Image 1 (cartoon, rainbow, N blue to C red):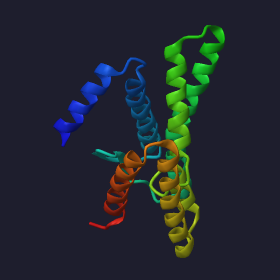
Image 2 (tube, helix red, strand yellow; image 1 turned 30 degrees about the vertical axis):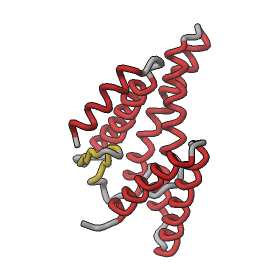
Image 3 (cartoon, rainbow, N blue to C red; image 1 turned 90 degrees about the horizontal axis):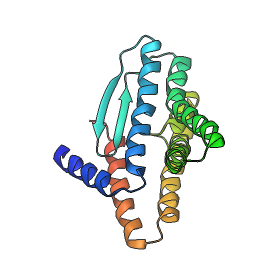
Image 4 (tube, rainbow, N blue to C red; image 1 turned 90 degrees about the vertical axis):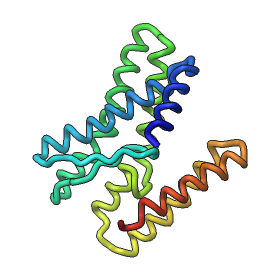
Length: 177
């Protein structure tokens, strides 16, 4: 699987004229570094799991407020990048800075969505101790992802393929192994 991912990355970087994929890799890496740095500041050693669907950080502290700090620091990095781009673009407009800013806006917006495995959903789970509320969040998360998939893609075939991949990921992510 790692060779497949490397080949896709190579060709995406090779044919990406606007550097969107490169900026996505850089911004995602710094997003995760924000979580890792916050985790280290809270005195715990983070555990990373890298898959085709992204990077999952685990081994959070038991303290709710420390975990909240860790969860906020990833999107905070994206917000800082957005603010820097706004300040630099007000000085002189550059297309690369604008694309970098847009990539970070998308990452920030996506990561704070109330979907259970994203930062926003984990923050809601953190303060929601009721089992039924957590199950309701699971259903809302699933429906929200389906809605986003069909809104973003104008092609029904691509939407169904992405939905199928998401359902597989969702089942694997929620199955205790």
